[in-house]
Length: 328
Image (tube, rainbow, N blue to C red; front, top):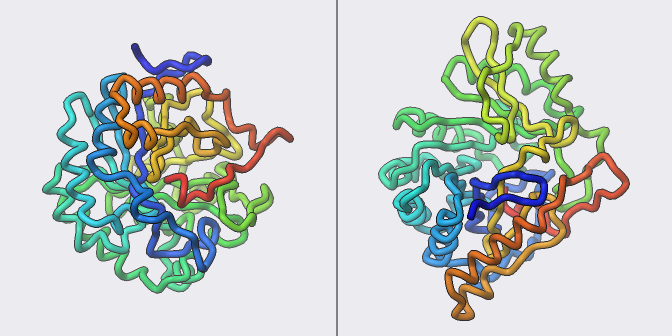
C-alpha cells in the first residue's frame, strides 16, 4: 500500500540523518558551543538505517538522501552509501554536505555509487564564510567542490539567504553556477536555529533575490515540466546558461505538494522538518520488532502528517529540536 496521507499526498522520499555532529558552526543553525551532542550508542548503526530504508522502499519510497549534522564526519559513511544504493527499488540516492571533508572522501563516495551532491555554501567570499560558519574552511570546501566536479558528480549549492547579510552573495553564486555547471538553490532563512534568532524581517525573500538576478544577469524563465513535489522552484536564465532554484518555505510554502519523510540519527520518524511530534523507530529496531512493526511506524507517521507548518499563522510553534539534530 502506497504511503498516502490524509491530504492525498504520496510519500516516496526519505531523508536520513546519520549524525547530529558538524565540523562548522553556522550561526543560524548551531551555537558556538558547548553543544550537547548525542552519545554514540544513541545513534542508529548503518545496519539499522539500511533496515529502515528497505522497509520504507517496500512501502513505495524511491528517493533517499543522506544528511546530518554533517554526514561526512560519520566514519565510513561511504559504506552506508553503498548499502543504500544497492537496495532494489531505490531510484536515487543523494547526500547533503558542507563540503569541508569532501575532497578526501569524494572518490570513495563515487565508488560507492553516489552521483548527486548538495553542498551547503552561502557565499564565495572567504571572510563572509568565516563570519557565517565561525570556521576558516572556505578553501577546503572549494577544493571539495572542484574534486566532485572533476569526478563527474551532479553538484548543487544550497545557500541560506539571510537579509542584511547575504545580499552580496546572490549574484556571484549564480555567476559561479553558470560558469561551472552548478545549480544554485537559494533557501529562505527558516525558524530552525538553535538560538532563537529567527524572525521574518531577517528573511531574504525569493522575489527580492529574483529581482537582483534579473537586474545583474538577465531574465529568468521557469523550467518546464518540473516535479511539482520537489521543494525547489527552478528557473533558467533566458540565454540558456545556468539553472537556479528557490526553496521558499517562508514566502511560498510548498507543503501541499510535500512527499518527504525524515529519519533522525537517533531513530525517530518525522513527517515534517517543523514537526513537533515524532515516532520511535529505534525502540522497534532494538526491541526485537519485526519489519511489519517498522512499516506500521512509517505508515502511522504518514497518517499523522499535518497540512503544513503554518509559519505565517499564530498557530506556528518552532520544533523543539534545532536543525542539526533533526537532519537537513
